[in-house]
Image (cartoon, rainbow, N blue to C red; front, side, top):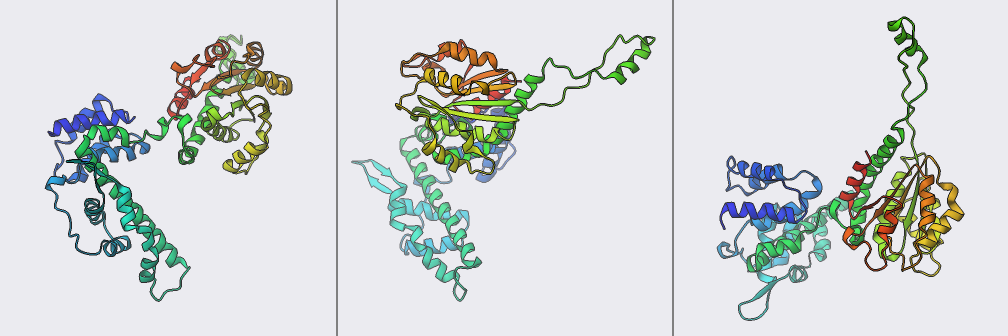
Length: 444
Protein backbone atom coordinates (compact mmCIF):
# COMPACT_ATOMS: atom_id res chain seq x y z
CA UNK A 1 0.00 0.00 0.00
CA UNK A 2 1.47 3.37 -1.05
CA UNK A 3 1.70 6.38 1.25
CA UNK A 4 -1.08 8.11 -0.71
CA UNK A 5 -3.36 5.09 -0.26
CA UNK A 6 -2.61 4.99 3.45
CA UNK A 7 -3.29 8.70 3.80
CA UNK A 8 -6.64 8.47 1.98
CA UNK A 9 -7.65 5.36 3.93
CA UNK A 10 -6.65 6.89 7.25
CA UNK A 11 -8.65 10.09 6.66
CA UNK A 12 -11.67 8.05 5.54
CA UNK A 13 -11.40 5.85 8.66
CA UNK A 14 -11.34 8.93 10.89
CA UNK A 15 -14.54 10.20 9.30
CA UNK A 16 -16.23 6.82 9.71
CA UNK A 17 -15.23 6.85 13.39
CA UNK A 18 -17.00 10.18 13.90
CA UNK A 19 -13.97 12.47 13.76
CA UNK A 20 -14.88 15.42 11.50
CA UNK A 21 -12.17 15.92 8.87
CA UNK A 22 -12.85 18.40 6.07
CA UNK A 23 -11.34 18.23 2.59
CA UNK A 24 -9.17 21.26 3.39
CA UNK A 25 -7.86 19.63 6.57
CA UNK A 26 -7.03 16.46 4.66
CA UNK A 27 -5.05 18.54 2.16
CA UNK A 28 -3.27 20.35 5.01
CA UNK A 29 -2.21 16.98 6.44
CA UNK A 30 -0.91 15.88 3.03
CA UNK A 31 1.12 19.08 2.73
CA UNK A 32 2.54 18.54 6.23
CA UNK A 33 3.94 15.18 5.11
CA UNK A 34 6.21 17.02 2.67
CA UNK A 35 8.07 18.91 5.39
CA UNK A 36 8.67 16.19 8.01
CA UNK A 37 10.99 13.20 8.19
CA UNK A 38 8.68 10.29 7.32
CA UNK A 39 11.07 7.84 8.97
CA UNK A 40 10.21 9.47 12.34
CA UNK A 41 6.91 7.82 13.18
CA UNK A 42 6.06 10.08 16.13
CA UNK A 43 6.69 13.15 13.95
CA UNK A 44 4.21 11.70 11.46
CA UNK A 45 1.68 11.15 14.26
CA UNK A 46 2.15 14.73 15.48
CA UNK A 47 1.72 16.14 11.96
CA UNK A 48 -1.57 14.31 11.48
CA UNK A 49 -2.84 15.20 14.97
CA UNK A 50 -2.01 18.88 14.52
CA UNK A 51 -3.85 19.17 11.21
CA UNK A 52 -6.82 16.86 11.80
CA UNK A 53 -7.76 16.82 15.51
CA UNK A 54 -9.86 19.70 16.83
CA UNK A 55 -10.99 18.36 20.23
CA UNK A 56 -9.16 16.41 22.96
CA UNK A 57 -12.01 13.88 22.98
CA UNK A 58 -11.10 12.78 19.45
CA UNK A 59 -7.49 11.92 20.35
CA UNK A 60 -8.03 8.39 21.71
CA UNK A 61 -9.75 7.15 18.55
CA UNK A 62 -7.20 8.98 16.41
CA UNK A 63 -4.29 7.17 18.11
CA UNK A 64 -5.92 3.75 17.66
CA UNK A 65 -6.51 4.38 13.94
CA UNK A 66 -3.04 5.84 13.44
CA UNK A 67 -1.46 2.69 14.92
CA UNK A 68 -3.53 0.57 12.53
CA UNK A 69 -2.77 2.55 9.37
CA UNK A 70 0.84 3.32 10.25
CA UNK A 71 1.97 0.34 12.38
CA UNK A 72 5.33 0.51 14.20
CA UNK A 73 6.41 -2.87 12.78
CA UNK A 74 5.32 -5.42 10.19
CA UNK A 75 5.19 -9.00 11.40
CA UNK A 76 7.06 -10.52 8.47
CA UNK A 77 9.92 -8.06 8.83
CA UNK A 78 10.02 -7.98 12.64
CA UNK A 79 12.34 -10.26 14.62
CA UNK A 80 10.84 -10.99 18.06
CA UNK A 81 12.89 -10.32 21.18
CA UNK A 82 14.71 -13.12 22.95
CA UNK A 83 12.11 -15.43 24.48
CA UNK A 84 14.45 -17.68 26.46
CA UNK A 85 14.43 -15.53 29.61
CA UNK A 86 11.68 -15.71 32.24
CA UNK A 87 8.97 -13.36 30.88
CA UNK A 88 7.55 -12.55 34.33
CA UNK A 89 11.02 -11.62 35.55
CA UNK A 90 11.43 -9.25 32.61
CA UNK A 91 7.90 -7.86 33.07
CA UNK A 92 8.63 -7.10 36.74
CA UNK A 93 11.68 -5.07 35.64
CA UNK A 94 9.63 -3.15 33.07
CA UNK A 95 6.82 -2.44 35.53
CA UNK A 96 9.38 -0.95 37.90
CA UNK A 97 10.98 1.35 35.35
CA UNK A 98 10.81 1.36 31.54
CA UNK A 99 10.34 3.54 28.49
CA UNK A 100 7.55 3.25 25.94
CA UNK A 101 9.81 1.63 23.31
CA UNK A 102 10.97 -1.12 25.71
CA UNK A 103 7.42 -1.83 26.84
CA UNK A 104 6.09 -1.99 23.28
CA UNK A 105 8.90 -4.32 22.16
CA UNK A 106 8.28 -6.68 25.08
CA UNK A 107 4.50 -6.61 24.45
CA UNK A 108 5.05 -7.60 20.81
CA UNK A 109 7.22 -10.52 21.88
CA UNK A 110 4.64 -11.71 24.41
CA UNK A 111 1.81 -11.50 21.87
CA UNK A 112 3.92 -13.58 19.50
CA UNK A 113 4.55 -16.12 22.27
CA UNK A 114 1.20 -16.32 24.08
CA UNK A 115 -1.40 -14.50 21.98
CA UNK A 116 -1.68 -16.87 19.01
CA UNK A 117 -4.39 -19.52 18.80
CA UNK A 118 -4.88 -21.82 15.82
CA UNK A 119 -8.22 -21.51 14.00
CA UNK A 120 -7.76 -24.24 11.43
CA UNK A 121 -5.33 -24.93 8.57
CA UNK A 122 -3.54 -21.73 7.62
CA UNK A 123 -5.64 -19.63 10.02
CA UNK A 124 -4.86 -18.10 13.39
CA UNK A 125 -6.52 -15.82 15.90
CA UNK A 126 -4.90 -13.32 18.25
CA UNK A 127 -6.06 -12.52 21.79
CA UNK A 128 -4.97 -10.10 24.51
CA UNK A 129 -6.59 -12.18 27.23
CA UNK A 130 -4.27 -15.17 26.80
CA UNK A 131 -1.21 -12.91 27.07
CA UNK A 132 -2.42 -11.21 30.25
CA UNK A 133 -3.49 -14.51 31.77
CA UNK A 134 -0.06 -16.06 31.10
CA UNK A 135 1.85 -13.13 32.62
CA UNK A 136 -0.69 -11.94 35.23
CA UNK A 137 0.96 -8.55 35.78
CA UNK A 138 -1.24 -7.63 38.78
CA UNK A 139 0.24 -10.49 40.83
CA UNK A 140 3.70 -8.94 40.56
CA UNK A 141 2.78 -5.97 42.74
CA UNK A 142 3.86 -7.49 46.09
CA UNK A 143 7.19 -8.63 44.69
CA UNK A 144 7.96 -5.24 43.14
CA UNK A 145 7.04 -3.40 46.33
CA UNK A 146 9.39 -5.62 48.39
CA UNK A 147 12.27 -4.72 46.10
CA UNK A 148 11.44 -1.02 45.74
CA UNK A 149 10.69 -0.43 49.44
CA UNK A 150 13.54 -2.50 50.85
CA UNK A 151 14.34 -1.05 54.29
CA UNK A 152 11.52 1.53 54.13
CA UNK A 153 8.39 1.72 56.25
CA UNK A 154 5.33 0.16 54.60
CA UNK A 155 2.03 1.97 54.25
CA UNK A 156 3.50 5.43 53.84
CA UNK A 157 3.85 7.89 50.99
CA UNK A 158 6.67 5.91 49.37
CA UNK A 159 4.47 2.80 49.04
CA UNK A 160 1.54 4.84 47.71
CA UNK A 161 3.77 6.44 45.09
CA UNK A 162 5.27 3.09 44.09
CA UNK A 163 1.82 1.51 43.74
CA UNK A 164 0.62 4.33 41.53
CA UNK A 165 3.68 4.01 39.29
CA UNK A 166 3.34 0.23 38.97
CA UNK A 167 -0.40 0.44 38.26
CA UNK A 168 0.26 3.04 35.56
CA UNK A 169 2.90 0.77 34.01
CA UNK A 170 0.50 -2.20 34.12
CA UNK A 171 -2.02 -0.10 32.19
CA UNK A 172 0.72 0.82 29.68
CA UNK A 173 1.55 -2.86 29.20
CA UNK A 174 -2.10 -3.81 28.71
CA UNK A 175 -2.52 -1.02 26.15
CA UNK A 176 0.64 -2.13 24.32
CA UNK A 177 -0.60 -5.74 24.16
CA UNK A 178 -4.02 -4.62 22.88
CA UNK A 179 -2.40 -2.40 20.23
CA UNK A 180 -0.20 -5.23 18.93
CA UNK A 181 -3.14 -7.66 18.85
CA UNK A 182 -5.10 -5.12 16.78
CA UNK A 183 -2.13 -4.72 14.43
CA UNK A 184 -1.87 -8.49 13.84
CA UNK A 185 -5.63 -8.86 13.30
CA UNK A 186 -5.48 -5.97 10.81
CA UNK A 187 -2.69 -7.74 8.91
CA UNK A 188 -4.77 -10.93 8.73
CA UNK A 189 -8.26 -9.52 8.21
CA UNK A 190 -7.75 -6.08 6.69
CA UNK A 191 -7.24 -2.75 8.40
CA UNK A 192 -10.64 -1.37 7.34
CA UNK A 193 -12.52 -4.21 9.02
CA UNK A 194 -10.71 -3.98 12.36
CA UNK A 195 -10.90 -0.17 12.32
CA UNK A 196 -14.71 -0.23 12.09
CA UNK A 197 -15.08 -2.68 14.98
CA UNK A 198 -12.40 -1.30 17.30
CA UNK A 199 -12.79 2.46 17.56
CA UNK A 200 -15.55 3.78 19.82
CA UNK A 201 -17.29 6.97 18.74
CA UNK A 202 -16.14 10.19 20.39
CA UNK A 203 -17.78 11.04 23.69
CA UNK A 204 -20.01 13.72 22.17
CA UNK A 205 -21.41 11.21 19.65
CA UNK A 206 -22.20 8.31 22.01
CA UNK A 207 -25.90 7.47 21.83
CA UNK A 208 -27.65 8.31 25.11
CA UNK A 209 -29.70 5.12 24.88
CA UNK A 210 -26.49 3.03 24.77
CA UNK A 211 -24.35 4.95 27.22
CA UNK A 212 -22.47 2.98 29.90
CA UNK A 213 -21.72 3.93 33.51
CA UNK A 214 -18.16 4.78 32.53
CA UNK A 215 -19.45 7.03 29.74
CA UNK A 216 -21.81 8.76 32.16
CA UNK A 217 -18.90 9.53 34.46
CA UNK A 218 -17.08 11.21 31.58
CA UNK A 219 -20.24 12.99 30.42
CA UNK A 220 -20.52 14.71 33.80
CA UNK A 221 -17.65 16.96 32.71
CA UNK A 222 -19.54 17.91 29.54
CA UNK A 223 -22.82 18.77 31.26
CA UNK A 224 -21.94 21.95 33.14
CA UNK A 225 -20.75 24.00 30.13
CA UNK A 226 -23.87 22.91 28.24
CA UNK A 227 -26.09 23.94 31.15
CA UNK A 228 -24.56 27.41 31.20
CA UNK A 229 -25.06 27.80 27.45
CA UNK A 230 -28.66 26.57 27.63
CA UNK A 231 -29.46 29.07 30.38
CA UNK A 232 -27.81 31.88 28.39
CA UNK A 233 -29.78 31.03 25.23
CA UNK A 234 -33.12 30.95 27.06
CA UNK A 235 -32.31 34.26 28.74
CA UNK A 236 -31.50 35.85 25.37
CA UNK A 237 -34.83 34.66 23.94
CA UNK A 238 -36.66 35.99 26.98
CA UNK A 239 -35.09 39.45 26.67
CA UNK A 240 -35.68 39.78 22.93
CA UNK A 241 -38.15 42.56 22.16
CA UNK A 242 -38.14 43.92 25.70
CA UNK A 243 -37.04 47.40 26.63
CA UNK A 244 -36.04 48.65 30.03
CA UNK A 245 -37.33 51.69 31.88
CA UNK A 246 -37.13 55.19 30.38
CA UNK A 247 -33.72 56.82 30.91
CA UNK A 248 -34.97 60.35 31.67
CA UNK A 249 -31.58 62.09 31.89
CA UNK A 250 -30.30 60.73 28.58
CA UNK A 251 -33.63 61.49 26.88
CA UNK A 252 -33.48 65.15 28.02
CA UNK A 253 -29.87 65.41 26.92
CA UNK A 254 -30.74 64.02 23.48
CA UNK A 255 -33.63 66.52 23.17
CA UNK A 256 -31.16 69.45 23.25
CA UNK A 257 -30.29 68.64 19.63
CA UNK A 258 -33.93 69.26 18.63
CA UNK A 259 -34.61 72.44 20.61
CA UNK A 260 -35.78 70.66 23.74
CA UNK A 261 -38.33 68.51 21.91
CA UNK A 262 -37.83 64.85 22.96
CA UNK A 263 -37.92 63.32 19.49
CA UNK A 264 -35.70 60.46 20.62
CA UNK A 265 -36.46 58.47 23.73
CA UNK A 266 -33.68 56.53 25.42
CA UNK A 267 -34.36 53.46 27.54
CA UNK A 268 -32.21 51.74 30.11
CA UNK A 269 -31.13 48.22 29.17
CA UNK A 270 -33.33 45.56 30.77
CA UNK A 271 -31.95 43.93 33.85
CA UNK A 272 -30.54 40.46 33.26
CA UNK A 273 -33.09 37.92 34.39
CA UNK A 274 -32.47 34.24 34.94
CA UNK A 275 -35.54 32.32 33.79
CA UNK A 276 -37.36 29.59 35.65
CA UNK A 277 -37.17 26.02 34.39
CA UNK A 278 -39.46 23.01 34.67
CA UNK A 279 -38.06 19.67 33.51
CA UNK A 280 -40.46 16.78 32.86
CA UNK A 281 -38.48 13.58 32.33
CA UNK A 282 -39.43 10.07 31.24
CA UNK A 283 -37.71 7.76 33.77
CA UNK A 284 -38.84 4.40 32.35
CA UNK A 285 -36.45 1.49 31.70
CA UNK A 286 -36.61 1.96 27.91
CA UNK A 287 -34.81 5.31 28.23
CA UNK A 288 -32.95 4.67 31.50
CA UNK A 289 -29.55 5.79 30.21
CA UNK A 290 -31.06 8.91 28.66
CA UNK A 291 -32.88 9.62 31.92
CA UNK A 292 -29.60 9.39 33.84
CA UNK A 293 -27.99 11.92 31.53
CA UNK A 294 -30.95 14.29 31.63
CA UNK A 295 -30.93 14.18 35.42
CA UNK A 296 -27.25 15.09 35.30
CA UNK A 297 -28.23 18.00 33.08
CA UNK A 298 -31.02 18.97 35.49
CA UNK A 299 -28.59 18.93 38.39
CA UNK A 300 -26.26 21.27 36.50
CA UNK A 301 -29.09 23.54 35.36
CA UNK A 302 -30.12 24.12 38.97
CA UNK A 303 -27.21 26.56 39.37
CA UNK A 304 -28.08 28.54 36.22
CA UNK A 305 -31.77 29.34 36.77
CA UNK A 306 -33.71 31.31 39.37
CA UNK A 307 -35.82 28.27 40.06
CA UNK A 308 -35.59 24.71 38.76
CA UNK A 309 -38.28 22.12 39.38
CA UNK A 310 -37.78 18.59 38.09
CA UNK A 311 -40.49 15.96 37.63
CA UNK A 312 -40.10 12.33 36.65
CA UNK A 313 -42.72 9.91 35.42
CA UNK A 314 -43.38 6.41 34.13
CA UNK A 315 -47.16 6.01 34.39
CA UNK A 316 -47.52 8.61 37.14
CA UNK A 317 -45.60 11.79 37.88
CA UNK A 318 -43.68 12.81 40.97
CA UNK A 319 -41.60 15.87 41.78
CA UNK A 320 -37.95 14.85 42.15
CA UNK A 321 -36.46 18.30 42.85
CA UNK A 322 -35.94 17.31 46.48
CA UNK A 323 -33.33 14.74 45.50
CA UNK A 324 -31.07 17.44 44.04
CA UNK A 325 -30.57 19.67 47.07
CA UNK A 326 -27.40 21.83 47.18
CA UNK A 327 -24.35 19.81 48.14
CA UNK A 328 -25.86 16.44 47.20
CA UNK A 329 -23.80 14.02 45.16
CA UNK A 330 -25.59 13.52 41.85
CA UNK A 331 -24.90 9.75 41.71
CA UNK A 332 -26.26 9.24 45.24
CA UNK A 333 -29.22 11.45 44.37
CA UNK A 334 -30.14 9.28 41.40
CA UNK A 335 -29.86 6.12 43.53
CA UNK A 336 -32.13 7.61 46.20
CA UNK A 337 -34.54 8.79 43.51
CA UNK A 338 -34.91 5.28 42.11
CA UNK A 339 -35.73 3.88 45.55
CA UNK A 340 -37.95 6.60 47.01
CA UNK A 341 -39.75 8.42 44.19
CA UNK A 342 -43.39 7.72 43.33
CA UNK A 343 -43.33 7.41 39.53
CA UNK A 344 -44.53 3.84 38.94
CA UNK A 345 -47.96 2.38 39.45
CA UNK A 346 -48.36 -0.31 36.79
CA UNK A 347 -44.84 -0.13 35.32
CA UNK A 348 -45.86 0.78 31.75
CA UNK A 349 -45.07 4.22 30.35
CA UNK A 350 -48.17 6.38 29.95
CA UNK A 351 -47.45 9.90 28.73
CA UNK A 352 -51.09 10.95 28.65
CA UNK A 353 -51.73 9.92 32.24
CA UNK A 354 -48.47 11.57 33.33
CA UNK A 355 -49.37 14.87 31.64
CA UNK A 356 -52.83 14.87 33.17
CA UNK A 357 -51.42 14.07 36.60
CA UNK A 358 -48.83 16.81 36.23
CA UNK A 359 -51.45 19.38 35.21
CA UNK A 360 -53.68 18.40 38.12
CA UNK A 361 -51.03 18.24 40.86
CA UNK A 362 -48.32 20.62 39.66
CA UNK A 363 -49.98 22.83 37.05
CA UNK A 364 -48.99 25.99 38.95
CA UNK A 365 -45.31 25.14 38.34
CA UNK A 366 -45.64 26.41 34.76
CA UNK A 367 -46.13 30.13 34.27
CA UNK A 368 -45.29 33.08 32.07
CA UNK A 369 -41.64 33.09 33.20
CA UNK A 370 -41.16 29.34 32.82
CA UNK A 371 -39.22 27.36 30.24
CA UNK A 372 -40.73 23.86 29.96
CA UNK A 373 -38.38 21.07 28.88
CA UNK A 374 -39.84 17.59 28.22
CA UNK A 375 -37.41 14.68 27.83
CA UNK A 376 -38.53 11.30 26.53
CA UNK A 377 -39.12 8.99 23.55
CA UNK A 378 -42.90 9.63 23.21
CA UNK A 379 -43.71 5.89 23.40
CA UNK A 380 -46.90 5.61 25.40
CA UNK A 381 -47.89 1.93 25.08
CA UNK A 382 -50.88 2.83 22.86
CA UNK A 383 -52.50 4.89 25.63
CA UNK A 384 -54.41 8.18 24.98
CA UNK A 385 -51.88 11.01 24.42
CA UNK A 386 -53.75 13.82 26.29
CA UNK A 387 -52.83 16.36 23.61
CA UNK A 388 -55.24 18.98 24.95
CA UNK A 389 -53.59 18.83 28.37
CA UNK A 390 -50.13 19.23 26.84
CA UNK A 391 -51.38 22.10 24.70
CA UNK A 392 -52.67 23.90 27.79
CA UNK A 393 -49.36 23.44 29.59
CA UNK A 394 -47.25 24.73 26.69
CA UNK A 395 -49.59 27.72 26.24
CA UNK A 396 -48.87 28.82 29.80
CA UNK A 397 -45.08 28.56 29.43
CA UNK A 398 -42.81 31.21 27.94
CA UNK A 399 -40.88 28.52 26.03
CA UNK A 400 -41.52 24.80 25.59
CA UNK A 401 -39.28 22.18 23.97
CA UNK A 402 -39.22 18.39 23.72
CA UNK A 403 -35.95 16.43 23.36
CA UNK A 404 -36.39 12.91 21.97
CA UNK A 405 -33.46 10.41 22.25
CA UNK A 406 -34.70 8.26 19.35
CA UNK A 407 -33.68 8.81 15.71
CA UNK A 408 -36.28 10.70 13.71
CA UNK A 409 -36.69 7.67 11.43
CA UNK A 410 -38.10 5.69 14.40
CA UNK A 411 -40.70 8.29 15.34
CA UNK A 412 -44.28 7.04 14.80
CA UNK A 413 -43.15 3.40 14.66
CA UNK A 414 -44.76 0.92 17.04
CA UNK A 415 -46.28 2.77 19.99
CA UNK A 416 -44.49 6.06 19.25
CA UNK A 417 -46.74 9.12 18.88
CA UNK A 418 -43.91 11.58 18.42
CA UNK A 419 -45.42 13.43 15.47
CA UNK A 420 -48.70 13.96 17.32
CA UNK A 421 -46.88 15.58 20.21
CA UNK A 422 -44.69 17.52 17.76
CA UNK A 423 -47.80 19.34 16.51
CA UNK A 424 -48.19 20.79 20.01
CA UNK A 425 -44.58 21.34 21.13
CA UNK A 426 -41.37 21.64 19.05
CA UNK A 427 -39.68 18.24 19.20
CA UNK A 428 -35.94 17.79 18.53
CA UNK A 429 -33.95 14.62 18.01
CA UNK A 430 -31.36 14.52 20.81
CA UNK A 431 -29.39 11.27 20.80
CA UNK A 432 -25.99 12.57 21.94
CA UNK A 433 -24.09 15.56 23.29
CA UNK A 434 -23.38 16.80 19.76
CA UNK A 435 -27.10 17.05 18.98
CA UNK A 436 -27.82 18.60 22.38
CA UNK A 437 -25.19 21.24 21.63
CA UNK A 438 -26.74 21.90 18.22
CA UNK A 439 -30.18 22.28 19.85
CA UNK A 440 -28.81 24.81 22.33
CA UNK A 441 -27.23 26.79 19.48
CA UNK A 442 -30.54 26.94 17.60
CA UNK A 443 -32.14 28.68 20.58
CA UNK A 444 -30.06 31.77 19.81
